Length: 225
Image (cartoon, rainbow, N blue to C red; front, side, top):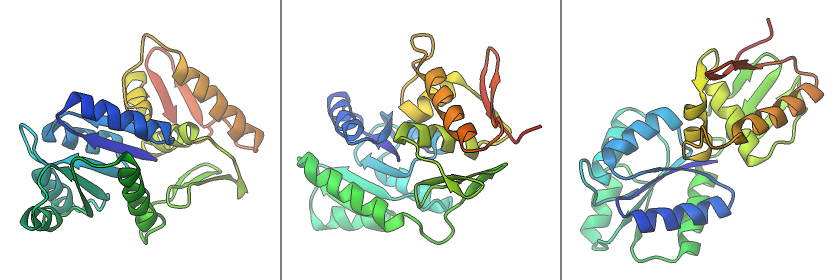
């Protein structure tokens, strides 16, 4: 599952991101509301953890933009304000839950799990298909010609990113940012290693080659030619 974490306090942002990654989530971070909107459009997170008081565009503005665009991605608001009227303002803006600072990480994780359970498999959840490969984000399931394929969280996130952009060439930087939450290109062969894992698992299950290398650029997901 991919989480977008938005907070303008670098130390807190890094601390929460570490906790989420330790729990197995893929984390994308943003320092303010404008960057959050860009990340939502490019990374397509499964949930957003969002601070209220930020420069450029505050958290309530991000929530209103998200709901006005028809996006139902669950949003957990973080704020130093815990008055009733502040909670009401956050929920009215479109947030799904509200957590006042300071908070225990265990409570943050529990609330996030609850939000993800609430939305998993909701009606209208898009099932992705490329050739015989089928990915169901709500059920967290991948099959090849109906046979299940066991993937790690990172492999699943990588495959989901590629399938959501079927036919598009995704650069290495785009894939690192989307799946790992940071641009490691130039310093790591992690992406190539995981693409190799993914190909072997899909092809062992009977799929033709659907993840194609675009030399010098990145990767593309498309059906067999």
